[in-house]
Image (cartoon, one colour):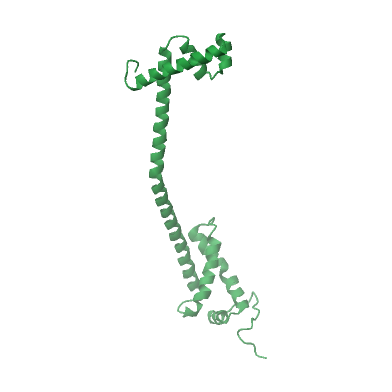
Amino acid sequence: MELTLTEPIEIPQSKVLDDRELVKRLLAKDGEAEKYFFRTYHEKLYKTCAYILGYQDPDAEDVAQEAFLVALRKLPEFEFRSGLNRWLYRICVFLCYEKIRKRKRQVAHLGEELESLSGPLAAEQERLKEEEEEKKRIVRLVRAQRDLMGDPCQELLRLWDEEQQSYALIAETLRIPIGTVMSRLARCKEALKQLVLQALKGGPHA
């Protein structure tokens, strides 16, 4: 019985098919011809991709595979004006540079996104920096006004503010009843508040 082109014929690895026979079998969807096509040209295409994209590039193999898919899809357009090998090479090179162009566009797009974000981010960082500086200025002002106060307020406020002592510990340190600590501290805080407000307004203690 005569075999048709749609029936796969096993192609030994040692056999070499000329371009016309190979293309004819590929167009007939011959599975063995597709294996032969891949086996014959894969290494050359991969090396081309690795050379253009870089030998450590993770996309080199994917681009080589894509070159085969594109070639199989465009095979009906192949007119034998050049060898199949040269035609595949041009497809592969085109896909490699298309990959590079796509990466450049992605990098440019990312750069634009980062630039668009950097404005608000810089403004927010500047605002936070100004807020932090203002907090530090207020702390310095409060402590400067506290240092202008006489005892017992100065010592009470120092123990409460800088040393973070509890009412009970302040009472133990100063050897006074805890109730006295609470009432005195309340009065001292109010007095300090007034001094700070005066200083902020440019009063005599500024």
